[in-house]
Length: 170
Image (tube, rainbow, N blue to C red; front, side, top):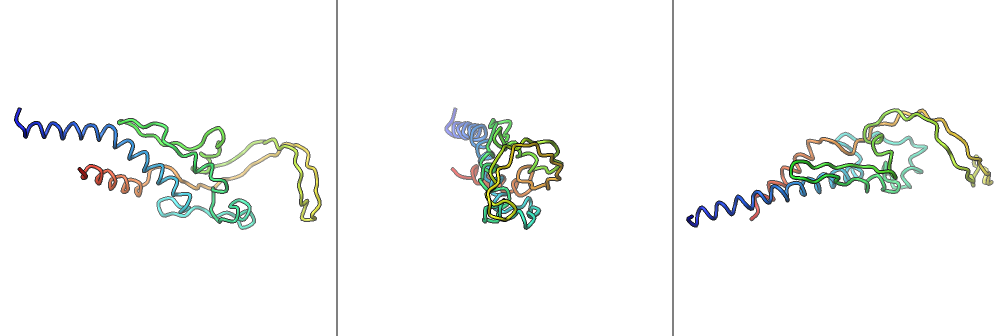
């Protein structure tokens, strides 16, 4: 085998290794980064999320003005669950974050939920403390769609750019 053939074979071996190892990792890292950035920009493909009602905004955003990031648990739950040469899957939510899907897709929230007993320190704005007994609360609420994960033309453009840069270096 001549030297030129050997160089070509070496290049294809590197290419196969890059394709099997580097591409899935680049796709997974880029997707997670892109999906987490949606919480900062509060939009999906340049369409802004529906804002909170003013009476809930201060409490739900802890004064920061960002929707869905009071504690950041939902955003931090975004992670790659499968990273293989043939498949990359990024998921959000867990047993501690069961609300991930309804926030991403929107929809009707219905059901009866148990409320533990607690002390309301400012009962009806009077400044006095009142002990509230445990009870069941019926909920029927339409959750607006605030998409942070899914197919995006902007994510595809970023992926093409990063993969092109990765394959053109060497």
